[in-house]
Length: 286
Image (cartoon, rainbow, N blue to C red):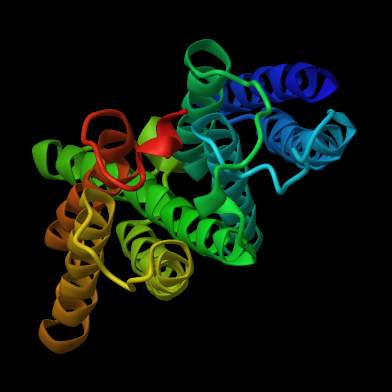
């Protein structure tokens, strides 16, 4: 299928972007940074086209197959990569901190590599539970939230590296070496907070639309399925982050570590539940 070939090109573009962002940290070359950003944009555009073309391809197959390409694990993973790059480009547009790409693009790349190497790209008919427009609303809002959490995790790792290095070597000039291209600790902390502020309401909408979809498919809004339970756990982690930030002024290392823990829980909710646990969402591993 042409869409699969396009996704292969996307993987190459995201790999080139990641490598160039890392080279930028070493060389401090503005030209390299622009090339890294350009590769990310090109990959994002092709990713968009590939998702759209896969949608078109589904309607060209015999039988009642045509549907939005978000219904199996392969499609959700490549869409996850798309959302990560989308959130990264929005953050880059606002903050103009290209070094962040070295810590965010790997998430998009690993998503694409995992999809291409490990998952079945076959387009199959929808099971009855997935035949609802609420599926689209649920998946889109959830994955935009997940992507914002991925960006928050990447900048949190940058924050911990930066403050750890400055603490161990306070005599070093903050403008020297690779760390000189990192945003300030204050900006990294702010991006972490703003990313979670974007992701949390999207995750909330994802849970709400998922509950409506569950009632449509199974006749109940909530059944404590493993996916539902872990979605609630993730929601509580980020709710605790925002509560602590707003009421207690949590920032810095505490906020960074909680952001990383939250994204770890997000990944388990997304992949671990589908691949390890059984439940109503087990079809997502197909």
